[in-house]
Image (tube, rainbow, N blue to C red; front, side):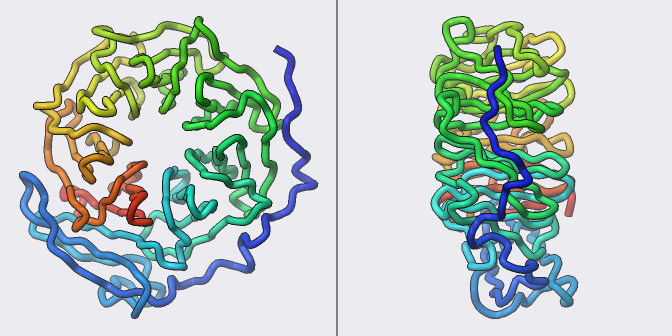
Length: 380
């Protein structure tokens, strides 16, 4: 397929209106600390800290800059909710990603992206304005110096060092309601309504557009890469497609008993294992990424899941967020149920995205306009 130039030269790029107007503040400003009791199913009680507009925090481990907050419940769980205070610019966060200790949150309603460090309380940077091309952002991914954001019918590339928009790629037929992004070297994979495409991150040239009966993508909702393979989850037809991450060559399509779950909605991957969660079924499947074979299936009775909207692997644990249950469930490496955080009293409200980094987990809450930071009991 002939490459098409769909971007514009970075040297002509300019920062979007309203973005990064001056250096980020060193402090979050005024905040108030609210502590409430929270139920931890099968694990005792914990505590939550909610950051909102008001007075400065009352429990700063390091008062100069308030780089972290610590509240420990009887279960040893520390949770921090970054609320929709002006300092973070959050309204309806839908996606987040992490790279080199920085976390980026895309907000579909505010048409913005917020960046902050993995330590709670770090001063944020916020990108917004028409020059960034943000429009109902639904996915983000990051490399060492670049951030990619999927909008309704376009992609935005940002230089995270300078804070400038590199290019906005739009007006292309192959970009249609992108739902997921993942990087493999210089190749960016994009899941669209009924196709999966890739482009060269250096030039912005389209490398491939995969569609049609050969691939049979039906509203793919998640992308994951492991063992140099790309895994595409399509809940529309209950399948997961395995491709070569470097070329897009089709390896196989898993569905039915070979997949173990009939409504794959989200994925989490390690170096040799891929976990797939059902959107409504609450069923989990573990796939060996080297052989493509089903290792095990964890039933809803075993997982105690009420459906899945996002999942991540971290420190040997599997974390699954559920919109319908306003919950996050912690599972062992084999899918064994450990604990669940649930209810709006925990700060969780229609959690839509989840990542794990070091000993922490971050969750976006669409209805609450917030991001929850969770430090598991084992890490506290």
